[in-house]
Length: 210
Image (cartoon, rainbow, N blue to C red; front, side):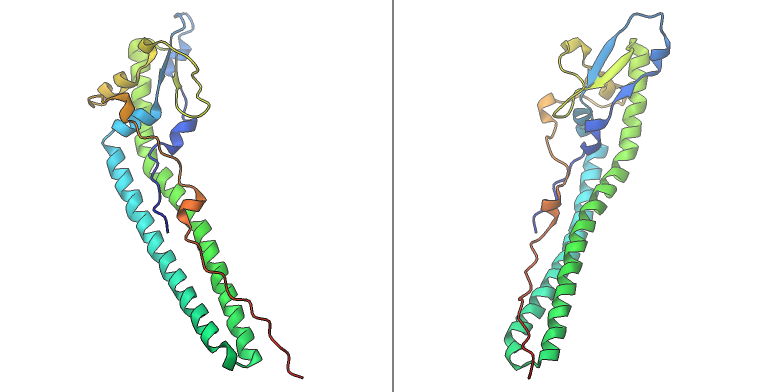
């Protein structure tokens, strides 16, 4: 089974902010932008989130490995003893293998969903903290809007460097900004990465005794 790829900024792709300063209609329009993914990667919480996700994915992998091992063992036993089995016993064994294979497939699907839910739960406090500091930076620096520059289709298509408030947000949280290139470019765990290919049950036609 391939290792789960941990994405600390999965929620960041759709994470946008409008600050409280929007209410100040008399003030001139001032727009800033930030890379939520970059800021998250600089926060100390990111390492803890990554560690917890890895531990959780390891648990899921162990359970899937156990199910896959059980399936392979029963397939081998079926193949070795199939010639001596009665039609009734053979049909029963085939049904058991089909049910076990279906159980593995369902577990793979549920594991992917469970990992994504775990990631969202772990990310929420960090995203809430980030939102709070984005609002503070916007208010203190007179920004009417702050956009998110992440994603394949970012909200920001072009902007001057002095409009990037990422480092201001980090400093507001007491974090020394790092290089922008240090931001990890990782993807949300895909279903394929959580799945170990389950062996296919041997389909043997049962001969009916005359």
